[in-house]
Image 1: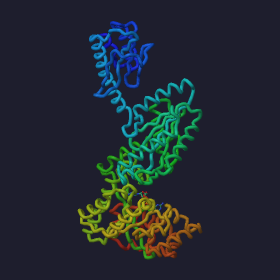
Image 2: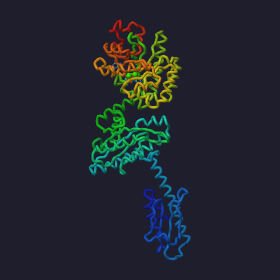
Image 3: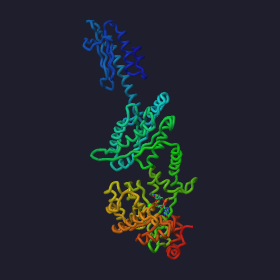
Image 4: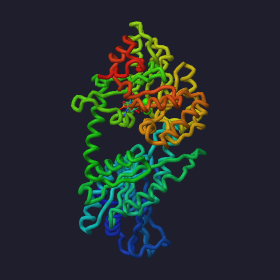
Length: 556
Ligand code: C2E
Ligand code: CA
Ligand code: CA
C-alpha cells in the first residue's frame, strides 16, 4: 500500500497513475499467477493483457469521488481459485479509496486551473492563457519560418445593447458571437475572450499577412448577420485590429498591444472594418492613452473652461442665444480642442461627470449675469451620444437646474442626427420631457447625418443648425446653395428655425439673409470667447448691431 501511495502523484495524469497501480497490483497479489486486473478511472480504462470482461469477477471495488462513482477496480481469474481472501479485498478497497481521493483532488485542481485560465461565460481561454498560447505558437512559427496573426475584435455598440436590454441578453449575445467566431477559424487557432466585448483570435502559421485580412473579413461578415435572442432581433458590428508576427512584433506582449492600437484605428475609421498595425499607430495610441489619463484629472484640477459663442438674429444681428463650447487648458499642451478629447471622454465615460459640470457651470454663470441685471439669452449646450443615452439624463438636468434656481427657459440642447436613429419611441419621449420642462432642442451639424427632414418631423425639435461644410462654399458652389435653400424652406415648412453655422464672411451672411435663414453663428461676428468677453456685449449693446459698425467684434 505504501508503494501504491507513492504513485498517487499530482503531476501525473490518471492514465499514468492507473498504469503504475495496475502493474504493482497484479504483481503484488498473493495469487498473482493467472489473475487479471482492470482499473477504470474517469475516462481511462486499462487492464492487464488477457483481461476479459466476462471472466468471473472475484474481487471488485468501486471508486468514488465527491460521493459519485468515478471508476472501479476489478480482479478476475481464469481458474477457480480460492482467492477471495479478505486481505486482498481489503487491499483493493483501500486502493479504490485512495484513488478516489486522488481523483477528487485532481478534478478540483483542474477546475481551479480552468477558472484561472478560462472565461466563465464563454468557456474561452482568457488573456493569461492566450498569452501562453501565443508564446508557444511563436516558438513554432519561428522554427518553421511561418507568420502568425493576432486579431483583436471589439464589438461596436455592445454596451448600448447591454444597457438597454439587460445583461442577460448581453450575455446570450456574447455566447452567440463566440460560436460565430469559432466557426470562422480552424481548430488549431485560438479564440479567447479578454472580458467585456473584446475577443482575441490567434491564427497559427499563416503564409501571408493578407491571409489574416481574409479571416478578418470573414468574421465581420459573420458578425453582422442578425441575431435572434429571446425574440429580439439584434444587430452588431465589429472593429478588428491585426498585428502579424514577425512584421509587427516578436513577443506575445507586443502583438497584443499592437493589435489593440490597430483596433482603435479601425474604430476611428468608421467601425465595421479591420486594420493592420503600423508603427505610426503606436505613437498616436500612446498619445491618446496619455491624454485619457490626463483627462481623468482635468475636472478636479479645474483645467476645463467654457467659452461662449453668440448666435445672432438675422437680419438685425442681435444676439439671440449663445453656444457654450468646452475647452481644456492642458498643463503641457495648452488649449486642447474638444475634437481631440470629447471622443475620449465618451469612450471612458468621463463625459457624464463632465456634462454635469458643464450644466452646473452654465447655471452659475447665468445666475451671475442675472444678478448683475443683464438680459441673458438662451445658452445652447452640446450633448454627446453617451450623455443622450444615459437613463438619468433628464432627471439630472432637472436636478441641477432646480438646485441652482435656473429656469429651463435659459437652456437649449444640441444633439446630432445620429443620436435620433436608435430607439425612436424612447427618443421622442426624452425630447418631449425636455420640451415640457421648457428646454429647446436643436439638431446640430444638420446635413452630415443620414436623416431626412421628413424623418425629423416625428421629433419635437425647434431649431436646425446647418452644418458648416454646406455654408463654407455657399457663395461659390451652386450645389451647396441649392442644398442650403432647400433645407431652409423645408425646415420652415416644419415650423423649425434655422441657424447657419460657421459664417465667416459678409457675403455668406448676405446670401443667407436673402434665403430667409433665421440665425447665424460664426467667426464673422465672434469666435467662441470667455464669459467675461460676452459680458462686454451685455454692457455695450451697441457692439451688437453689426449694421452700425461691422469692424467691432467681440474677439480681439
Ligand atoms: P459643434 O457643436 O459643431 O461646434 C461648433 C464648432 O465650430 C466649434 O468648434 C466652433 O468653435 C467652431 N466654429 C464656430 N464658428 C466658426 C467659424 O466661423 N469657422 C470655423 N472654421 N469654425 C467655427 P469647437 O469649439 O472646436 O468644437 C468642436 C466640436 O466639439 C463641437 O462641434 C462639438 O461637437 C464638440 N463640443 C464642443 N464643446 C462641447 C461640449 O461641451 N460637449 C460636447 N458633448 N461636445 C462639445
Ligand atoms: Ca454644437
Ligand atoms: Ca455644429
